[in-house]
Image (tube, rainbow, N blue to C red; front, top):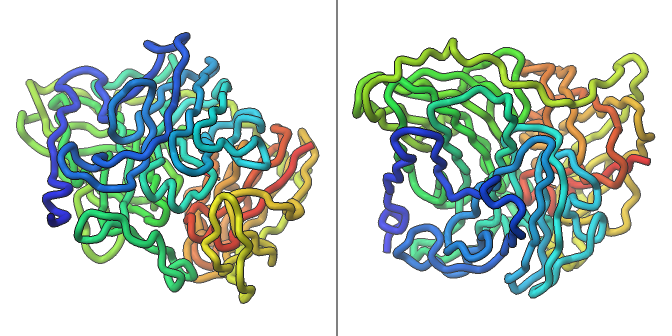
Length: 463
Ligand code: C2O
Ligand code: CU
């Protein structure tokens, strides 16, 4: 079976009109009912017809096999779900980008116990920010995420502008051989460089899916890069659009789509203005790398809604505290390669190598195995993390539990917006300003999972 038949492009109608989603989703309709978020191994998740052994996914309650559901939450409203582990190994759920209590952050040993096979863990929290976020395990992550455990979270704000449709795109690769079976999740040689790429590129677990959307309408396209390695740069053909949010947080002024790379862990909210004529197609393309390829396409349906991109005002702001830059303490963090070798075994899987370090400490793993924190922050104080990439590779540096503003860089980049993940360019030094307002121990790591798990990982504490 060739990869082509395995992943043959399927046209999933996102419903012609109205806010239909590209993926099954759960939300307020189920609020109040106990939700079980089941992590399980499945076989037929890439297509309905061809088995790919060893896939992993999440499903809600009795839902059937498929890609992980989009979890819908509301800003300021409590969300709860019981993780049920039906895998053959321990797992947890981390809610990437949500500024929630430390005990809900999903890092085994550090914020909660391992959830062993057959066990459950109850997550309950209130998302303070609206936007596009995502969820994934924090144990044996290269394997668990690599095999499919990466889902998108949409946090709605009642004050959000109304769009004619909304489409969620979860972008990621799978590392399969020609027979459709998983192959080794990484190559050490690549882990020591920019990371090991997957062999099958997907959007919502399909190759170049096509969606229907209202002609002349405004579509909110929520894009999450959940791959363990790949950095995207997206471009649009056959339609107009603008980026209104990065990593969940609204932009003060919209930017063009192809201005910004989107690295592992990052999100981008894009307003697509559909072509006016029925049957016309707008195409989202990845232009990073030598050969552009189609990420998704959108076919205009019906008579033109005649909407204008100008109709879309800024999204409501998220209540992210702004650091006092004059009073802020500067904390240098150097991201380097390291010559250290060997890595200790861990319940959450060790890759067996050490290639990277933060401030010269290499910490291979998903958890905090007894290493001192990178910094001990005082609650309520302002800090600047001066992150310096002293390598020739990009590193998407992610902080748990708190968002920061990118306030300076020695390289051209968009400045001033709030995020939880900065895609640090080769030789870049950037200042990340934050108020340490969330008590607990918070991971800080590269989101190229091979880098994270071969040393480029640490944590900060807030007391
Ligand atoms: Cu997406 Cu440590 O997280
Ligand atoms: Cu990295």
